[in-house]
Structure formats: C-alpha cells, structure tokens
Length: 433
Image 1 (cartoon, rainbow, N blue to C red):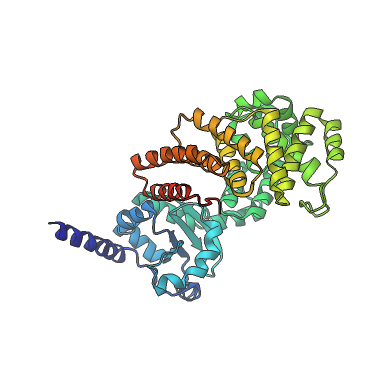
Image 2: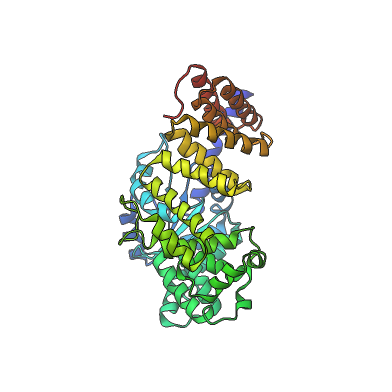
C-alpha cells in the first residue's frame, strides 16, 4: 500500500501540470525577446505569472484557476501568457534558468506571491496584481488590465490629458506607487495635493483616508502645510482621528522635522558622508523653531543613523542604549521587534564589548519575559547574546526552550537551525560568524 501511495503522489504533479497545459496556453518562449516578437506579431499584451516554487497560493492558482476553461479562454484570446519562476532551486531546468535574468529585472515589482505582471506588446510595464483570486475575480482582474479606459496605462493617459476627477486622481497616485512608478506617483500626488488638500478645511483632513495620503506621500509635506502644523499641535487628537497607535502623529512630524532640519542639511548631496556633522548646531537650530526636547531626541536619532553609516557599531549601540535609558523601551509589538533586531543584527554580530553585551542580554530578558517565553525568535536572540557574553550554560538552556517551541509547531526549518546552534554552543564554536 505504501508503494502505491508513493506512486500515486508522483503522478499527481504530472496530472496537475496536464490540467494547466490544457487550460491557459503558456508560451514556451525561452526569453523575453522571443515573447515580445510573438506579442507584437499577434498585437497582444503580455501576462506574466510570477511565481515561487514554495508558494502555496501559486499552486492553488495553477490547480483551481488557470485550469478553468473560462479563465483559459479569456487569457488565450487576449494575452501572450508566460510563467516565470522568481526563485531558484537546484532542480531548475534550462528553460527556467533561461528566464533568470528577466526574473531578476522584475523583482522590484514583486513584493508578494503570486504576482501577475502586465506588459504592452512592446514590453512596457503596465501594472501588476497580487494574491490568490477565484476564477471570476481573476477574469475581472484581467479585463481591468486591458480596459481601454480603466487600465493603468489608460488612466495615466487620462492624467496627462487632465481628465481625471478627484477620486480617480487619488486612486491613480496609489496605483502608481504600488507599481513602483515612484516619480510618477509623486507627480500625480502633487497635483492631487494642490487641488484637494492644500486649501481644504482642516476638519476634512482628519480621517483615516486623508491620513493615508499624508503618510504615503509625506515627502510632499512640510511645516508650511497647515495639516502638518495641526498634527504637530494636536498629536493625541490626530492619533485618535486617524485611527492610529499612540505617538503615530509624533513620529510623522518627527520625520518631517528630521528631514528638513537635519538630513537635508547634513551635506550638500543630502547624504550622510564621512565628516561628522556639527550636531550641536543642528540641535540648536531645531530648538529655536520647536523645543529642546524635540531637538535632543531627533539629533540623537540622527547621530545613531550617521554612526551606522560609518559602521561605528560600538558608538552606535552605546547611543541606542542611551536612547532607551533616556526615553524608555517601547514594549509594543513593533517596539519589541525593534529591540530584538537591534540585539541580533547589530550587537550579536558586531559587538564584543562586555558591558554592551551584558546590557543587550538584560534588554532581551525583558522582552522574553513580556512574551511569556512564547516567541521562539526572541528566545533564540536572548540565547545567542547570552552565549556571546560568555554565559554558555544559560544560553543552551534558553536555546532549548526555543527548540521545544518550534518542534511543537512542526517548524522543520527552525528545528534544524536551533539544533545546529545548540551543538555549536556545546562545542564552544562561534555562532555569530
């Protein structure tokens, strides 16, 4: 029975592939140039199924959607379709390898799987969609992307013609941002801001929808904008109005102040160079316009960022810990992640100073205790920093707790990793290299 079951499992992928083949007719072209020749010859846009071998929803699209006759008929009639594997494996054949270069070029558009990319017959990028869709939903997505009026390229043309209304303009700004057309997104957003934000009553801008625009296109805003002034002066009110977390509004205005009073003035090319800025002068300038507390906090953040750029890890970590001592440790979800990343990515990998290692271990113990020892990643970070600090016995005990959690979760990848770490600890091997 076991042999029969194994044989049947081997047949299933072939059967599924056959189903897909009898549905959408994916091109067998060896590279993009061949696809472009076919697309221009048939005057059809290009549809790319950008998938990953490990992606479950990608396999569901193959099985449940691409094999559907209605979907297949629509794709085959209106597109040149290709499947491109975005990751690589040792089992990749020559056909898949032939698409490596194009896959690498398209990675900037792919932030999730599955991703569906669209191009004109001439190869101009015309948009993307992400995620699993049911059959009828996917047909609607396909139709939208070749709609002569509603497609991305059609909307861009309407923008240039000046014929988009308020809702269409805002939607297109976000669409361009999602499509990684950042300069174009800013251009569209600038028009929207000028028409519908700059002279709007403050009350009309105190809602989550308006805040999404502020947050997405914050680089269009400065303290000359009345909405930024209002947010600065009424932070608790705007946190609630926007439906955000505490101190969200402070973070937003901190960004604007930091950008305009620090980062844009550190060097002529607006980058952090190797010459240490005059931090006292920067702090004084901010204090004149705002207050000393803000000036100290933002200047400290800028110093830390500058030290990271210089790879001066010890000084950067000292200031990170000074910041925590001065302002307290953020113990919210994102705050704990931030501390964990600081300890693992910086202290664990680059710091040998005993006092800094001890401080990092103390911080991680706080995080682990707050989580009730239920987060295996936090336990692993805590164990790692303990080990580097010379507390081998305790480090192994904590790492075993992380291992126990992932074993119960049937997490095979982390189970293997944590077991290997424990062996290295037991053998006094460095685990930070």
